[in-house]
Length: 210
Image (cartoon, rainbow, N blue to C red):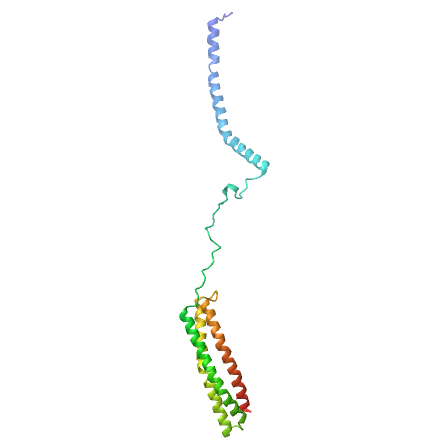
């Protein structure tokens, strides 16, 4: 028996067959979203790796050296007179010091005068001296001792000048001060007198021993 299908039946049948399609569409969309979420980290890591690779191939890793803008620099203006200052001149020797030095030199010269006065008698006694222990030898020994004692003031003057010179040098150790120079000059004069006296005494003493 032949069954005629109406248009309404066809429409109802089409709707019933087409109804599952939305469910399949939703399921497919969910699967695609899940896959995108899973692949996102992988794609991000790949992008970073490609970026680093590009940096490396372009010219290596960034340099850790200090850049010019990071360097400390500056300029300065020297203070007026800095580095070229001249030390102040040392003061001249005082009048009191010069007077004292003149007195010491005079004392040494006076002592030398007495020394020269006794020189002739000592030379005569030494020339007439006999053997050791004789009266003439004893007379020569006394004359020589008198000659030596006559210069004691000069020896004391030299000792004082030595002390003054040491003090002056300690006060100005870098450069000899005018005071030290004045003391040194006086000291040289007195030392020259004593040196000549020492030479004569040594010569007479040598003759007396023989």
